[in-house]
Image (cartoon, rainbow, N blue to C red; front, side, top):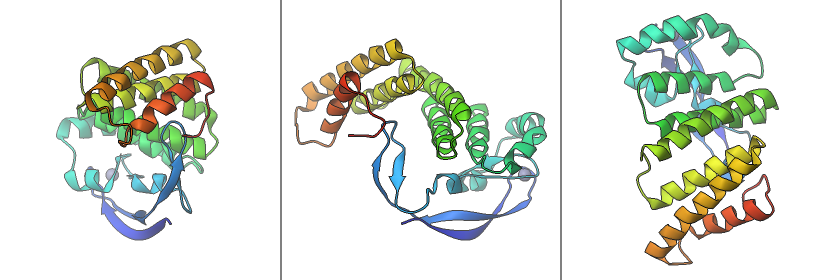
Amino acid sequence: MTTLQDEIWVCPVCEARLQVKAVHTCGSHGADSDFRPHFWGIDPLESYVHSCQECGFSGSAEDYRDGVPENVIRKIRKFLTPRTRDLARPGSPFFRYEFMALIHEWEDRDSLEVGDNFLKASWVARLHSNREKERLYQREAVRRLEEALEIGECEDQAQRAAVSYLVGELHRRLNRKRRAETWFHRALGEFELWEKEHGDPASDLAWLGDQIRRQLEAPADVLN
Ligand SMILES: [Zn+2]
Protein backbone atom coordinates (compact mmCIF):
# COMPACT_ATOMS: atom_id res chain seq x y z
CA MET A 1 0.00 0.00 0.00
CA THR A 2 1.36 3.40 -0.95
CA THR A 3 2.02 5.89 1.81
CA LEU A 4 3.53 9.33 1.31
CA GLN A 5 5.21 11.66 3.76
CA ASP A 6 5.86 15.40 3.83
CA GLU A 7 9.49 16.33 3.29
CA ILE A 8 11.49 19.46 2.55
CA TRP A 9 13.93 19.16 -0.38
CA VAL A 10 16.40 21.94 -1.22
CA CYS A 11 17.02 22.67 -4.91
CA PRO A 12 20.72 22.13 -5.73
CA VAL A 13 20.55 24.78 -8.49
CA CYS A 14 18.77 27.79 -6.94
CA GLU A 15 18.47 26.71 -3.27
CA ALA A 16 14.68 27.10 -3.22
CA ARG A 17 12.99 24.97 -0.54
CA LEU A 18 10.38 22.54 -1.85
CA GLN A 19 7.65 21.03 0.25
CA VAL A 20 7.08 17.60 -1.30
CA LYS A 21 5.07 14.45 -0.77
CA ALA A 22 7.74 11.76 -0.95
CA VAL A 23 7.17 7.99 -1.16
CA HIS A 24 7.38 6.35 2.23
CA THR A 25 6.15 2.84 1.39
CA CYS A 26 4.60 1.09 -1.62
CA GLY A 27 3.99 -2.37 -3.02
CA SER A 28 2.87 -3.82 -6.35
CA HIS A 29 1.06 -6.82 -7.82
CA GLY A 30 1.67 -7.61 -11.50
CA ALA A 31 2.60 -5.17 -14.25
CA ASP A 32 1.82 -3.93 -17.74
CA SER A 33 3.70 -5.62 -20.57
CA ASP A 34 6.21 -2.72 -20.65
CA PHE A 35 7.00 -3.43 -16.96
CA ARG A 36 4.90 -0.62 -15.42
CA PRO A 37 4.06 -2.03 -11.97
CA HIS A 38 0.45 -2.16 -10.75
CA PHE A 39 0.63 -0.63 -7.29
CA TRP A 40 -1.57 -1.27 -4.29
CA GLY A 41 -3.39 2.00 -3.64
CA ILE A 42 -2.35 5.21 -5.35
CA ASP A 43 0.40 5.06 -7.97
CA PRO A 44 3.55 6.47 -6.31
CA LEU A 45 5.56 7.03 -9.52
CA GLU A 46 5.05 10.77 -9.73
CA SER A 47 6.05 11.18 -6.09
CA TYR A 48 9.56 9.78 -6.61
CA VAL A 49 10.58 12.77 -8.71
CA HIS A 50 10.00 16.41 -7.88
CA SER A 51 10.65 19.65 -9.73
CA CYS A 52 11.72 23.06 -8.58
CA GLN A 53 9.13 25.56 -9.79
CA GLU A 54 11.73 28.34 -9.71
CA CYS A 55 14.42 26.93 -12.02
CA GLY A 56 13.05 23.65 -13.42
CA PHE A 57 15.57 21.32 -11.78
CA SER A 58 13.98 17.85 -11.51
CA GLY A 59 15.16 14.66 -9.92
CA SER A 60 14.90 12.02 -7.23
CA ALA A 61 15.82 12.55 -3.57
CA GLU A 62 19.30 11.26 -4.47
CA ASP A 63 19.68 13.80 -7.29
CA TYR A 64 18.74 16.60 -4.89
CA ARG A 65 21.42 15.41 -2.48
CA ASP A 66 24.13 14.83 -5.10
CA GLY A 67 23.95 18.28 -6.71
CA VAL A 68 24.62 19.23 -10.34
CA PRO A 69 27.81 20.21 -12.22
CA GLU A 70 28.19 23.82 -13.35
CA ASN A 71 27.90 23.08 -17.09
CA VAL A 72 24.58 21.29 -16.47
CA ILE A 73 23.27 24.17 -14.34
CA ARG A 74 23.84 26.45 -17.35
CA LYS A 75 21.74 24.12 -19.53
CA ILE A 76 18.98 23.91 -16.91
CA ARG A 77 18.79 27.72 -16.82
CA LYS A 78 18.81 27.97 -20.60
CA PHE A 79 16.39 25.16 -21.52
CA LEU A 80 14.28 24.27 -18.45
CA THR A 81 13.85 27.54 -16.51
CA PRO A 82 11.83 29.02 -19.43
CA ARG A 83 9.58 25.92 -19.28
CA THR A 84 8.65 25.96 -15.57
CA ARG A 85 5.08 26.84 -16.53
CA ASP A 86 4.73 23.26 -17.87
CA LEU A 87 5.39 21.94 -14.35
CA ALA A 88 2.43 23.83 -12.89
CA ARG A 89 -0.06 22.50 -15.44
CA PRO A 90 -2.62 20.27 -13.75
CA GLY A 91 -2.46 16.57 -14.62
CA SER A 92 1.02 16.83 -16.12
CA PRO A 93 3.48 15.32 -13.60
CA PHE A 94 5.16 13.47 -16.51
CA PHE A 95 7.13 16.69 -17.19
CA ARG A 96 9.10 15.96 -14.01
CA TYR A 97 10.42 12.74 -15.53
CA GLU A 98 11.04 14.43 -18.90
CA PHE A 99 13.10 17.19 -17.25
CA MET A 100 15.00 14.63 -15.15
CA ALA A 101 15.77 12.57 -18.27
CA LEU A 102 17.18 15.65 -20.02
CA ILE A 103 19.30 16.57 -16.98
CA HIS A 104 20.65 13.02 -16.74
CA GLU A 105 21.48 13.09 -20.43
CA TRP A 106 23.37 16.38 -20.00
CA GLU A 107 25.25 14.71 -17.13
CA ASP A 108 26.34 12.00 -19.63
CA ARG A 109 24.69 9.21 -17.68
CA ASP A 110 24.19 5.80 -19.34
CA SER A 111 21.65 5.52 -22.14
CA LEU A 112 19.99 2.74 -20.12
CA GLU A 113 19.32 5.17 -17.27
CA VAL A 114 18.09 7.99 -19.54
CA GLY A 115 15.93 5.46 -21.43
CA ASP A 116 14.45 4.30 -18.13
CA ASN A 117 13.62 7.92 -17.17
CA PHE A 118 11.74 8.41 -20.46
CA LEU A 119 10.01 5.02 -20.03
CA LYS A 120 8.73 6.14 -16.63
CA ALA A 121 7.63 9.47 -18.13
CA SER A 122 5.54 7.42 -20.59
CA TRP A 123 4.01 5.42 -17.71
CA VAL A 124 2.99 8.63 -15.92
CA ALA A 125 1.54 10.03 -19.16
CA ARG A 126 -0.49 6.81 -19.59
CA LEU A 127 -1.78 7.13 -16.05
CA HIS A 128 -3.02 10.63 -16.92
CA SER A 129 -4.49 9.42 -20.25
CA ASN A 130 -2.20 11.67 -22.29
CA ARG A 131 -1.65 9.45 -25.32
CA GLU A 132 0.36 12.03 -27.25
CA LYS A 133 2.95 12.46 -24.49
CA GLU A 134 2.99 8.72 -23.81
CA ARG A 135 3.97 8.07 -27.43
CA LEU A 136 6.53 10.87 -27.44
CA TYR A 137 8.26 9.46 -24.37
CA GLN A 138 8.07 5.89 -25.71
CA ARG A 139 9.91 7.06 -28.84
CA GLU A 140 12.56 8.80 -26.69
CA ALA A 141 12.91 5.72 -24.46
CA VAL A 142 13.24 3.22 -27.30
CA ARG A 143 15.96 5.30 -28.98
CA ARG A 144 18.09 5.28 -25.79
CA LEU A 145 17.49 1.59 -25.11
CA GLU A 146 18.52 0.60 -28.65
CA GLU A 147 21.61 2.74 -28.24
CA ALA A 148 22.41 1.07 -24.89
CA LEU A 149 22.29 -2.37 -26.56
CA GLU A 150 24.37 -1.15 -29.48
CA ILE A 151 27.20 0.23 -27.36
CA GLY A 152 27.20 -2.73 -24.96
CA GLU A 153 25.91 -1.09 -21.79
CA CYS A 154 24.04 -4.18 -20.55
CA GLU A 155 25.95 -6.01 -17.87
CA ASP A 156 24.96 -9.57 -18.75
CA GLN A 157 23.00 -11.86 -21.06
CA ALA A 158 19.85 -11.71 -18.91
CA GLN A 159 19.74 -7.92 -19.08
CA ARG A 160 20.35 -7.95 -22.85
CA ALA A 161 17.37 -10.30 -23.27
CA ALA A 162 15.09 -8.17 -21.07
CA VAL A 163 16.08 -4.85 -22.68
CA SER A 164 15.67 -6.33 -26.20
CA TYR A 165 12.19 -7.50 -25.21
CA LEU A 166 11.35 -4.01 -23.90
CA VAL A 167 12.54 -2.42 -27.16
CA GLY A 168 10.23 -4.80 -29.06
CA GLU A 169 7.36 -4.03 -26.70
CA LEU A 170 7.76 -0.26 -27.08
CA HIS A 171 7.80 -0.60 -30.89
CA ARG A 172 4.65 -2.74 -30.61
CA ARG A 173 2.92 -0.07 -28.53
CA LEU A 174 3.97 2.52 -31.12
CA ASN A 175 2.28 0.39 -33.84
CA ARG A 176 5.61 -0.39 -35.51
CA LYS A 177 4.65 -4.01 -36.10
CA ARG A 178 7.58 -5.15 -38.18
CA ARG A 179 10.20 -3.57 -35.95
CA ALA A 180 8.49 -5.05 -32.90
CA GLU A 181 8.67 -8.55 -34.39
CA THR A 182 12.31 -8.14 -35.35
CA TRP A 183 13.15 -7.12 -31.77
CA PHE A 184 11.05 -9.88 -30.20
CA HIS A 185 12.96 -12.41 -32.31
CA ARG A 186 16.23 -10.80 -31.29
CA ALA A 187 15.13 -10.93 -27.63
CA LEU A 188 14.26 -14.60 -28.03
CA GLY A 189 17.74 -15.24 -29.45
CA GLU A 190 19.31 -13.47 -26.45
CA PHE A 191 17.04 -15.41 -24.10
CA GLU A 192 17.97 -18.76 -25.69
CA LEU A 193 21.66 -17.91 -25.30
CA TRP A 194 21.00 -17.23 -21.63
CA GLU A 195 19.04 -20.49 -21.37
CA LYS A 196 21.94 -22.43 -22.90
CA GLU A 197 24.27 -20.99 -20.30
CA HIS A 198 21.97 -21.54 -17.33
CA GLY A 199 19.42 -24.10 -18.51
CA ASP A 200 17.38 -24.16 -15.34
CA PRO A 201 13.68 -23.88 -16.23
CA ALA A 202 12.75 -23.07 -12.63
CA SER A 203 15.03 -20.06 -12.57
CA ASP A 204 13.63 -16.58 -12.19
CA LEU A 205 14.12 -15.55 -15.83
CA ALA A 206 12.06 -18.38 -17.37
CA TRP A 207 8.98 -16.11 -17.50
CA LEU A 208 10.75 -13.83 -20.00
CA GLY A 209 10.93 -16.53 -22.67
CA ASP A 210 7.19 -17.20 -22.29
CA GLN A 211 6.43 -13.50 -22.37
CA ILE A 212 8.41 -12.90 -25.58
CA ARG A 213 6.71 -15.84 -27.31
CA ARG A 214 3.30 -14.62 -26.18
CA GLN A 215 3.87 -11.09 -27.52
CA LEU A 216 4.80 -12.65 -30.88
CA GLU A 217 1.73 -14.88 -31.03
CA ALA A 218 -1.09 -13.06 -29.20
CA PRO A 219 0.14 -9.73 -27.82
CA ALA A 220 -1.42 -8.31 -24.65
CA ASP A 221 -0.92 -5.09 -22.70
CA VAL A 222 -0.52 -6.84 -19.37
CA LEU A 223 2.41 -8.96 -18.30
CA ASN A 224 1.81 -12.70 -18.29
ZN1 LIG B 1 15.60 25.53 -8.29
